[in-house]
Image 1 (cartoon, helix red, strand yellow):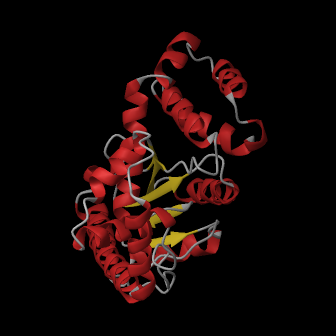
Image 2: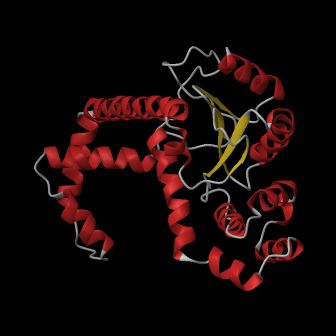
Length: 277
């Protein structure tokens, strides 16, 4: 799942294209059409509400035909609305990314939050990873980052943030909650490694088995991973990723730079060198 991210405010040439703005999902187009209907004076909110409630008469066939005809006669209205939406979203994401990367350098604790960290305690150089435990590219990136941190654990602080792509990876969110629960007992990084290195086994049985191998209190582990607190922790990371325009994994940020996909060790070394200069 390798994508590129636009980061026009960064001197790095690694980021070359927008990863959100090349396509737009169907539900967002429908949202734009809904706004178009509103501009015509139609009460689209009540129309959709009735439809969701199962009202088979939520929209008259004659009205539906008129709406479709308007769209056929004025397709440019939809295209312009989509273009405006994409432009607005792009600007919001660029602003959010810029603020996030700047805070990594000026106020590292604000971007770390309650996320698990390892490596240097000084937090002068942060490496933040948005990851999905069922993502193959994330597993590859894990091995590279693991090698990178062995060399630079006295200089770099690694921060993990969850971005489970649940629509395509059904075990991503349960695995993230399990790792979070292991973290409550001080074993997040060990559990994280086990997940990435055994992706084919992801599932409830494996989570419990891994917890036992790490000598965790199983009752507490199960309570924690199924708790509302775990849900809130996941939602916090996901909301941050959405604000930044991240919808693919892995995404890495290292002070002032963004890189995506199964990053090579040489890329991380180059970024670290640029950061140190």
